Image 1 (cartoon, rainbow, N blue to C red):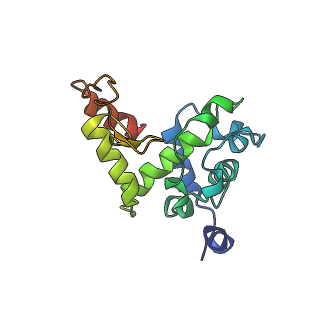
Image 2 (spheres, helix red, strand yellow):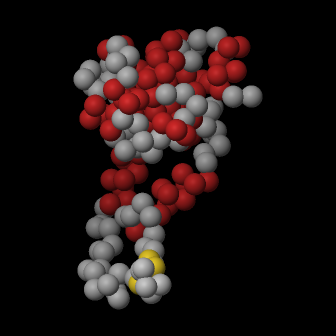
Length: 169
């Protein structure tokens, strides 16, 4: 059963809505006039069951609990295009991060791929591990063989700053 099916049986929870609005401090969700600029630039759109502007509308209506329990909030790739494109400074990115935080507080299942990405960033400062590439001549190359500079390890304090940024409080 998809999220849209669950939504037809759900009732709005205005208390949860208020909790999300407090977390968003200054990023007024009610300013969103559904111009759909966030959705038109979304890189994860094909993966989403609901479009970014629809997620924002559902939070505004009070369907926070259903969204926090769904997989939709983990599909956002946090490219921040919606933040750049939103004329009202009410982008879905901040709403989705707040929903993720709420899901973690409620001990909802966090997708394994998301946890792997977070641990990779904490360890190396990079979203993806170094990869070897194959040239057209079928030669396997790495950074060293291509004479690319070594990527430095994250500076001291990076992990603390990164974890604080994930909290978005």
